[in-house]
Amino acid sequence: MSGTPGWVSKTPRAAALALSLATLAFGGTAFTDEFRFEYDAGDKYRYLSTVDEEVYYDRRFSHTVEILNRIAFEVTEEREDGAGYLVGEFMTSMVAEGGYSMVTDKAYHSEYWHLADGRYDIAPRYFMPVVRHVPTFPNRDLKPGDTWNAPGEERHDFRDDFGIPDPYVIPIEVRYRYEGPGDYEGTPVRLVRASYTVFYQPPPPRSWTLAYPEQIAGYSEQLLYWDPERGMLAAYEERFKFIFDLSNGLSVEYRGTARSELIEAEVMDRERLEEEVREAVADLPDVTVRSDERGVTISMENIQFEPDSSELLPSELAKLEAIAAILAGIPDRDIMVTGHTALAGTPQGRAALSLERARAVAEALIRLGARLPEQVIVMGRGAEEPVADNATEEGKSRNRRVEITILEN
Image (tube, one colour):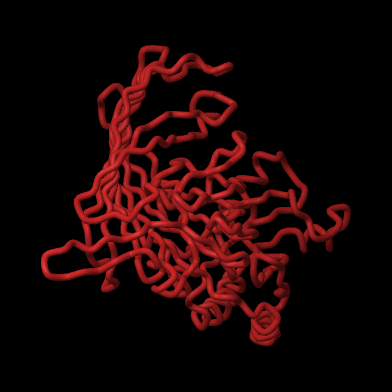
């Protein structure tokens, strides 16, 4: 259920700094390690987690869900005590039915101080991260076998599920055990186990629609990989099960596994990349290139589909083949494919059509080998972001576009 752990990591540091208080001895004396988060202003990361989840209604299996959580954040400030101020965008995507691209269904903005011991200082209005204050490390060196407890919380967005308007808080008490040295994909790490059980009977929320949780029970078991050379959490794995008994007598159960990895973003030379891409698409009609703080965007304006459908015309597929070849030459950046429509029809219809057309382009790029499915974000914006006047046919044709953004982070 959680799928989006609340930890984020500090910047790479020299081993002497990251482990300044750690000691390593032999001859029967166990080594100790210090676990502290630190940040450098200006650093950027993206954090990816995948969740394989089974959903049960009234204890009966309903369906499976594959979820990708993508977080892109920047450290905008740092403090002498090691805390960093993080500003991030959280996106939750699911595999589209009948396809293999990951379609974004939720997007959130959040910002907060992350303290050196792992706790958060965050305004209550933010829905993300879901799991907070995990891990929290004690203010002492740790040796293998050491255990400790620390409070945390889960905060969920139940606006669509139950009509609960505020972030829904579930308090947790987390048990930790430092296991000692380990390995993560060839990198020496320190292994920390974190687990918690939940049995919570919350009061009714201030408002809801059809029902609200009356009782929540379950558990989470996590294995955290701490990279001592970089002084950061390199990855995490989780197994979980949670049951929500609702006020209308029904129950919903989520069970599954999750894994995640934190990736440091390399600085993008946007001006150089923009110029290279512009030269590469110069012979493609109705294709423009621009850059902004997100990265470099290729815009396919007046993109042609079969009438009122998301099926691309052959001429557009030829353009995509050329664009896919360009993207294949820039393999280390995720891309975001965003659909836009002209101002026609209903807002709901425009949103659905723009998403389906973005998905069609994304699926074509994946089939052509430009990216793996987990490297592609798919979104539909309807007619919310016009680039021209919808009062003219020329303007409408420009607004009927699909944008492919090469993301910096």
